[in-house]
Length: 188
Image (cartoon, rainbow, N blue to C red; front, side, top):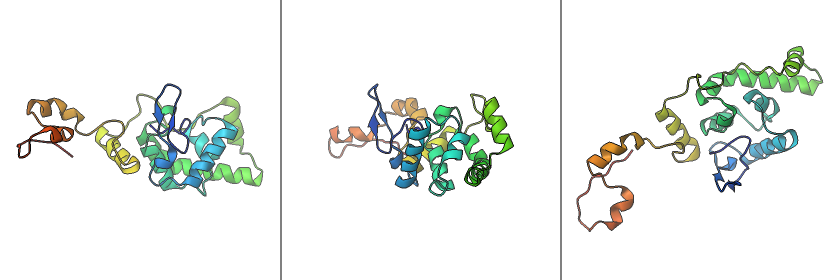
């Protein structure tokens, strides 16, 4: 899948032969914004957290809709966040990033920021296995919206056993059937 630290703009083959989804392929994500993200990642190294990404993203290019699309595509999953936690914290993250960038531009460093850096305190967005996540159907719907297809699963997977028991024919098998044959198929 797409990953904020591993994906390039275009699809690429990784060392282990896996194809990594390119950031240009995500709906609502502009090329200039992706190029800006990739340049920031190249100069500063991988993003350590969602706040780290937000503090360093060019907010003139990376608007709310684009960031939501990155979240729904699963770009921040490798950092330990759930998509739901990020969406619910997005407003706070945007406000923090705007303030952080204003301070940088004016040459000011916030006292909180200096303390946070010295203690390596992470942002208040929860991470880990115990953090709530969207229902699987919602995650799949979001992926379909921003990637154009279901990525982490398929809505019919949970019905696979039932579909086999009623002898539903996969659409891919239809060309091998005789013309005029009656078949049952299932779909979304």
